[in-house]
Each structure stands twice: as C-alpha cells, then as structure tokens.
Length: 273
Image 1 (cartoon, rainbow, N blue to C red):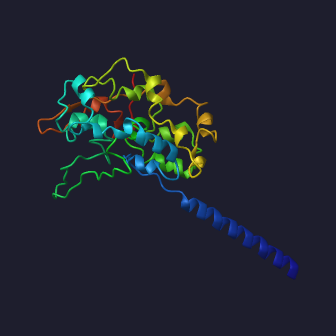
Image 2 (image 1 turned 90 degrees about the vertical axis):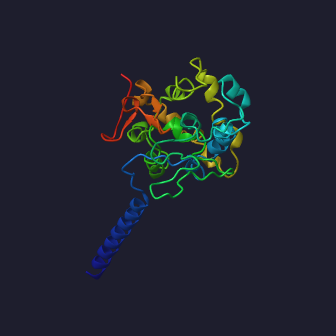
Image 3 (image 1 turned 90 degrees about the horizontal axis):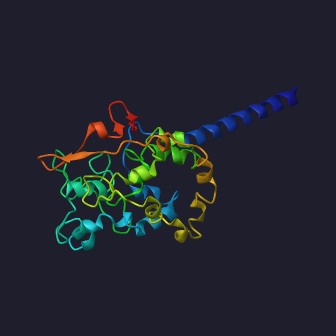
C-alpha cells in the first residue's frame, strides 16, 4: 500500500511539474497588440535578422533620409528638378517615401514635431543604428507597421505561416510595394519602368554580412523561407491598394481613405479589385 501511494505521489508530482513548465512556456509568449503600429528597423536587428539589417544599412534604402539634406543626392534632385542645396528633411511629400511610416501610427516624425502640450515628439536619430528615419523593413513588408506580426514571428521562433502574419498586415506583394514610391505619380522621382528584379537585389544582400555571431539568423539557410514559399499569400494573388495622398493647407500629408490599404475602423485590409 505504501509503495502504491508513493508511486501515485510521484506521478502527480510529475504532472504538476510538467504543467508548470507548460505554463512558463506559454507565459513567455507575448500577446499580439490590438492595433498595428510602426516600430522601426532597429527592432528587426539583434536576435532575429541581423545579417539583413546590416546589409540594409549599407543599401540606398538605409540611407534614404540622408539624401534629403542640403548638398546630398544632388544628381537625383537635379533630375527631378529639385534644388540640390535645399533642406527637404521636413518636406511632407519627401518624407512619405524617404522615411518609415510617416503620418501613421508609430511612424517617423520630423524635427519640430510636438504634441498638444508642446512636448517634442520628433523621432530620435541614431547614426549608428538607423531605424524609422530611413526606408526600413516595414515600408516593404507591412501595410500599417509590423508591431503585431513581429510578435507572431517571435512567438513562433520564425516558424510561422504566411496567413498567420498576413492577417496582421504583413504583405507579400513586393513588386507592387515598390510602386508605393518608385512609380507613384506624386513622387518627383517616379519611374514607371522600374526594373524590380534588378532593384530588389540591392535591398539587403545579406550573404556578405553573415558572421559567426549571426550565422544562426540566416533564415534562408535554415529552410524557413523555402518552406513558406510553397504557399501563396492572398496579397500575392490580389495585391493591396497603393496609397494616394494630398498635402493640406496646413502643410500636412493626408492619405486618402479610398486608397488606404488599411481600414482603421473596420480593422481590415483593402485589396485591389
């Protein structure tokens, strides 16, 4: 009888221990935020996408804001009939495509930005760790910011399916994404003949930036990208809308509701018909 009781006690103890481990594992998983929000490219660095981040820093996208400064990007400005010596770092039309999430939740805010109480809310710029002040990851990979699907990626340790993050605004219509800026009629640099295949190779040539410290973050080598590639996301079959905007009399950029790929009230994403 004593042995039986001892055996039962050990079994119960094991059950409670395993339950506790399961609860701890579940507790480590973060809850997905209720609303989408831009968080910046720096959040993708570190333990997740370091090779890609390091490559991006050296790319044209990783230096896009710098070209708005006086004397920078002179050739491109002249071609677009812009003044090479003018400061465009607070110009709303330029910020729309040269920064991340401008005029959207969590997005870039230029120098001089203040809240209703007069507090400075402008985005802090770190030359060593560029983020929202450049054309970051979220401008190509998200509809309204990656704050939500980033949590899904972390909770699944990168083993997520396309539909799991797409429902939070991750987009897979990459060639369509390029037209948000490079072929947009409101852009002074608009080029309807954009060579997508050629341009995408310059975004983050990560192979050159893999080292001993971040080799485990090579998501192509570990097969995650290849496995996801077997499935077709909705945005691949039906691309999302591309935003149109206007500059108000007060000098603010306002995105047209009819063309916004994300509906804040309905919390839904809008695809092309």
